[in-house]
Length: 391
Image 1 (cartoon, one colour):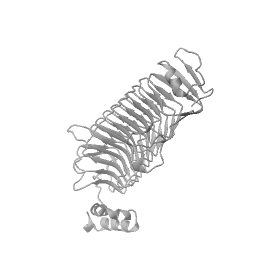
Image 2: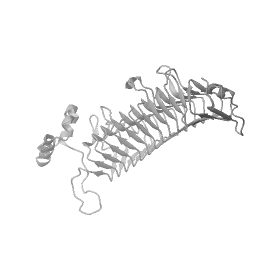
Image 3: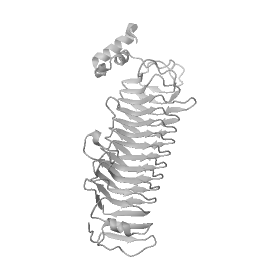
Image 4: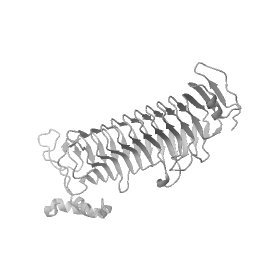
């Protein structure tokens, strides 16, 4: 495509403007390593490839249009920056993993202030450590969920910093085999997994909003995750977990909000190693179907100073058993009934998460449809007044 009066090219120390008759790809090919290429407006056909250190700056929202074929922007060199573009209409092949932006073997890539629209995969990093992904807006294809790609995918790309992004209509945000990632102040909604960690160590997720996915955050086979001041909202469905952990160790989740999820927290064999701390402290679990749901083998988890407010079930075991092998210290329970005679702010009797209807729904989950009805309230009142029915 010929781009009239759209391009200006400078070396790092300055230089002459580029020939306006060149296409964007020709200008990239002609630029010396380390140059800055400014693109002013216009629509530029993909695919575009960057195979040298380069800074590509969009002014007035220039468009990179993939025309529905393949990956739009390929980056295969270290030290590349792409800022200020609209990137739209990738291909639809899951086999070829068509993406808006794909960086492969590209350490230190910086992707910021871009808008990706109608893309299968949004931003895909492979073997590209040290990335900076900031303030991008990513919207996937309007296709059934099984046909979607991931909004953001990291594959063997450690030390990534992902901040201020918004995703919608993607499949997952995937962090796999990528240590020391930082995800801060993002909003991930309308997907399958808001964030899906696997085989990752020393991860941090802070200040994110996970909303309306099937699962907010799921971490598997990982160690050293910190989750702080995130919001987990409206994850519903058979596996509508706000946050879930499987076979993970050294976890700290603090000051998070869990509201309107099928189960706010799900634990499966976490921690998996002796002496590995897993702590949930000062979180708010409110108006969920279940506050904490765990498999019977879960042991040694610390729940300290959390608020459990009006969940249908405050805590439950998926299977036979109980949660007494974990530590519950200083938590607030909205349905606690006892006294505090000595006035120390701690109830004189231990809290018991025990309702007759909970026992019935554990045996027959289909009965959960009656939660909150007058019939259930009457049944629970009768069980308290006439304790022949105590579960």
